[in-house]
Image (cartoon, rainbow, N blue to C red; front, top):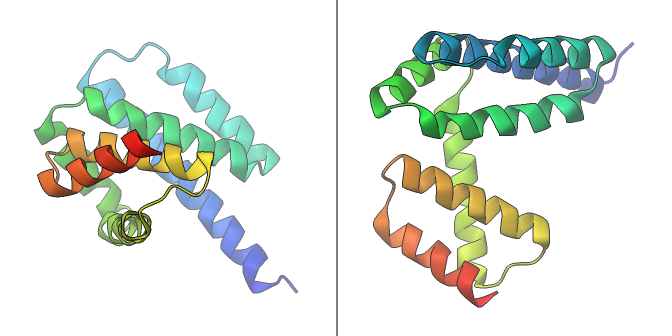
Length: 144
């Protein structure tokens, strides 16, 4: 009998694969994306190996490509992802909560946390996020 955590891992990996493949397909349709087939192969190979870490890293890289999409294209992609069962609102709320805790603390605890703040700032800038929050993140990044 599998533990709850193991079962959740399989589900999470399936969600990562689904998210990656949907996003790659969308980007290929929206604009020129010559490396789409190569990345798709990497995704499938990592999934076959059960390499969740590699899938998470690829997901982070592919999410970074959203910057090249226009706002209407990002909205369309978000709709496709949500239709496939990915709760983007919950993900964003969790991230907002985590970043708010760091901002409240007023200090960056690690290099990993710094990278997460940098990624969060990039996401806010890309999506025309809250200006006050962006300024707080920039200020914290500049002092730490």
